[in-house]
Image 1: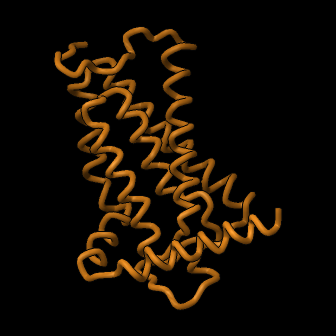
Image 2 (image 1 turned 30 degrees about the horizontal axis):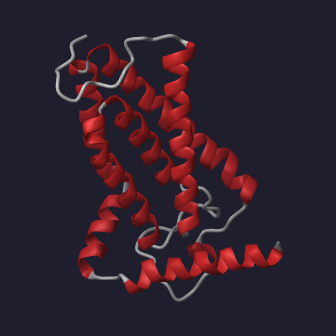
Length: 196
């Protein structure tokens, strides 16, 4: 078992160096710093929330609230519980010879809160608006990739964040659809416009 963990750790580091160094270029330097900055998403997030509350009908309004709840849960679980529990150092806290493009952040990195937050949003929004699933998947991937590229997370941190976000999003959907019996909380049909 120790040999397996050492192999996985070495693979994680090798992949980190590849994504952080081998793929480095000036365009990615600009784009990934922009994507990884949470301030970049404040205005788009506010627009999305407003649209869901104003034009989304009942399902849109509950989805807006679920997104907020999902972000709070994923952020608190990842940063407040799992990171102190796993004590998995960020690469920028223990490695040398890589590119750090932003502030390193807190000591521990597993799971990535950015990746978890993006994944829980993507899971919820993809359920309610399935025609936009590809958009949310790509955006979630780019946010996770950016955390590795800028030097603040290992690939395993990002994968753990994605898994956490998907599980939380799925759990929230099950709770609101089945336990609370909200029968109107169904995916929006692909071809027909649905009203409240």
